[in-house]
Length: 233
Image (cartoon, rainbow, N blue to C red):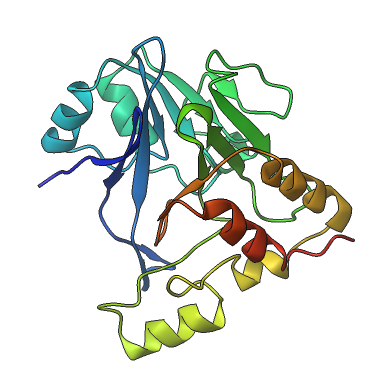
């Protein structure tokens, strides 16, 4: 049964189906739902739609924006767009190159001015050779929304093998953080650190992650701790 998890004023999360990275490693998924001041709905990293999920979101307002925050989180974009053809599809800078078959309307570059600016801030992560990601701040609820840059996968129910793999990758449980592969793939340390410092300058107290434990309260200190692993160049 689909459940909207309230995360603050006009912001919710919806758990999606598990996916398997490389066909074997199980990952939980989550989308974020924001009701804008206009009354329209903003969907971040949409999970696959089902009739129940569709009804739950429809009850909040009309879907106006579908956001692909990086080039990997693509599965729900086309299905939701098919259901709501008037919705605007926003994608990360590298999305189109990886998914030439997925139609979109606008790219979230650093200087993009989406209609929700002032209500939802965005920051493009620069300086990484692989990670193509845009992070967001929902200002009314003081909530930072992160896709893959921080991961805190649940340990419960995992096999010993995957607990070990995710532990070595630095993404297991509440002490998880920036994945090891991300840390090892930085190509421009000063540029990436500048992106991180931009995020840390935002005013937030809550944290929504696409994968794993979220935080309601105390998120600024935890995010600062996690990001301390990213070198300053």
